[in-house]
Length: 121
Image (cartoon, rainbow, N blue to C red; front, side):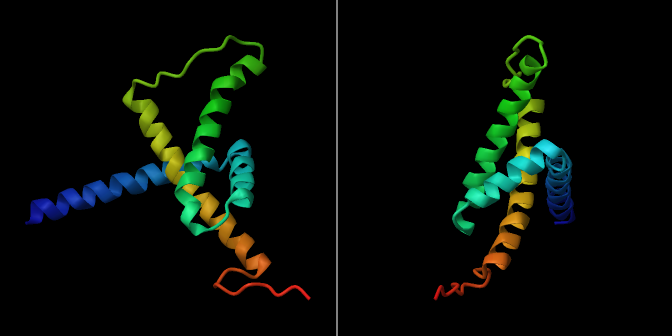
């Protein structure tokens, strides 16, 4: 039983490490701009996962196109490697955290945070 609890603890620690790495990846200028736009476009809390997935895809596309804009050659990312998918998962978790924070702030400012709707007169 102790071994199972240790394995669960290690798994949760790994997920927390991925989320931390993803948060660090999003906490750059490009990532914050993508997250703000995504939070503004997000309709409600149920669409958080799809919005974070879209933001992750945009981030990965920008990373692939950025060398071309700097005068280099276009190179496809190595999508068959585990490191690519771990980076994508980390970015997804980071975007989910940052978009949730921005969306919560947006709902506080618009008055829809706790289910009440703003009455326009």
